Image (cartoon, rainbow, N blue to C red; front, side, top):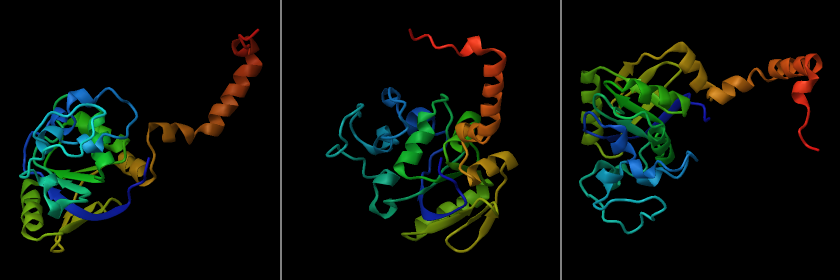
Length: 216
């Protein structure tokens, strides 16, 4: 998993509340568990006029010009501004996979659905909770000036707006440690690799019959 320390990026304002995980990545795309390849179908029903299908090329599909990610000024956005209760609905981990594969590193909103919030940390995304009035200011600044960027600093736990205003955000110490060091659940386990090997060697000596090969 990629570590997250500080990130400066173009911010895209998604001015919708209660964006659920089916809106983030529709159900027909959940057949794969590869974690990659979902970015082209992020917000599929909002981005395109037709219904997308797995393995379908998105080249030439009719776009909804009014949708924020289809606007040229937000091309390459890596920070998503959202409204309350972002990521509600089903618990599909494909939602953070799609956001990450598209290129987002952080989502900033007044509130998140719990499971989605937890899944973001496990997949290298930083979900940030700010006060509604701070979100309003970020929306105003980002929409007022094309190319507006925000700075997200996980170590300092701050978001800096295009005008230089700084907002502090809370984050659990353990989650912060994992994200700063790029540790997902597997990475955390592998930190105990030596202890795991010692245990396996001990068990092999104590109960060798458990490790007998079944090959003839």
